[in-house]
Image (cartoon, rainbow, N blue to C red; front, top):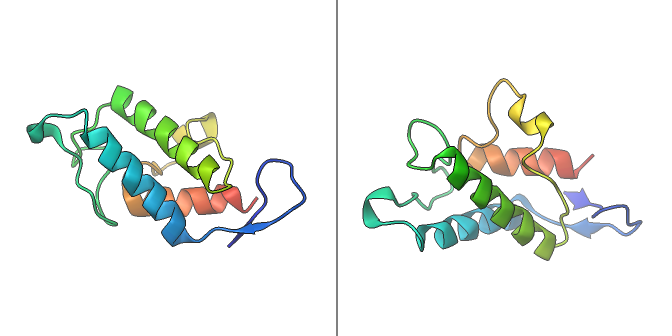
Length: 109
């Protein structure tokens, strides 16, 4: 997929694999501050938020901020914690797969 960061006229190529790696790295970093019983699963199909995840809403906000920062580092400037994301019928934050798909969709706009 080709993404145009911010309002720049230059396009860069960011793959779903690159987005996924940013998400997984943020989850690894979040685990450093969590005890063994509340660790997030680190996998491409892992849950992020919801009944299958130990992450609470405050933890989700922190994780999303880390993901946004990581995405900026690869040239993808997106806001994840906005009204659009929380108003969707199916949360884009339910799993790594759904978040990668959501980031890809909003970044292409």
